[in-house]
Image (cartoon, chains in turn yellow, red):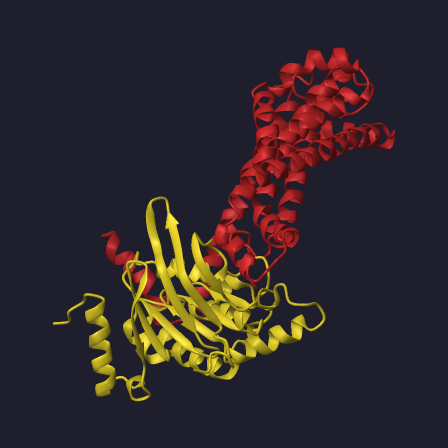
Length: 236
Length: 283
């Protein structure tokens, strides 16, 4: 194996997290290679968001070992922009002075919002605000990008457009990505690997073939049915 | 009967978009403003006429014009500006002391459990006393000097600012705080960029309430043994039955109240330009 040459970006060993007497993460093992896009699906309450928060350093561990890259950032389901700052300052938040403004502008151009730099966040639509949140994450050039259902609150058309944008951006910046979602199609279309989670553990690990990334392809349909079956959903 | 009329009135702008639809609400807005100002002006005119006709005795309620003349006379002698300045100074100093104390204590309580444990209960106990009830005590403590008046104004302004600061800090969206941690903001910058701006609408509301309290405190403080100030003017005028001066002082208090409120609103518009509820946004 080549692990000695290139250490994975994320390595979790027997990670455990409890809330009271409920064990949310149960001796969970996970590896994400550099530049790899991993999607995590599972029923609500299976611990997928807790896992993401643990990787982000927002939740503590109760046991196990966890290695994450020093630079990681999160895009949440809500945009979480500061309403009292204009769009560009939201993107530039906590960047080193001097170049901050220029970097924020080019990040905004990357998400197609170059002309919204001086706008107030309240004037943006849901999709635009989420693109700003994406720019705020990517401008930091993170080694690990954590996406916590970032498209869940968007309408179907905007979501499809966002998928394309995210795919392009990630292909360019190559961070390791963990996408938490409960949209099986989204997971297959975006990720290199799809994990399902059950009772605080990774239950299954599917590599997504290139063919499966086309909706309607037999590989897509098969993988989709498999994943749904693992989640306990039977389509009529 | 009425339904077809409404339909007829509504359909033309809908059929012809643009100019007519834009003009209609403006035409309706103008009479409202005219009417809303006409009534108080008419009342004023009636008051003037009744006073001149002798229906209202001048020592009960002098005519508006005579109050105006008194204002002019007292301005020329320099009496009015001097007293007004005295009062403004007291309000400003009292507000500065009470306001900054309220802000600091409120921030302490809002941020730390320890701060809350030390500060909050004491404030709540003192707050339970109507602050004007301690007037006799203030006179015993400070005599008739200036410091007693500062103290009263400070006391009246401390609580609204304290309470609203605490509330504002508590209401800051925890999701924004989490975002601040994710992008790695150090604690002090988190306070400056997320917590204080988030608490600002509430703090400014506190300032508005405090301004009202400041003038209330001043009215009381100045009618008790003050050597100057517009409250003193009123007390003095009472001794000599100068009803016109008393009415003038009342009008002045109203004007001051209006001006300070306008000032507070101006602050809100400037500082909360981002907030959708304060004419915010890019427009």
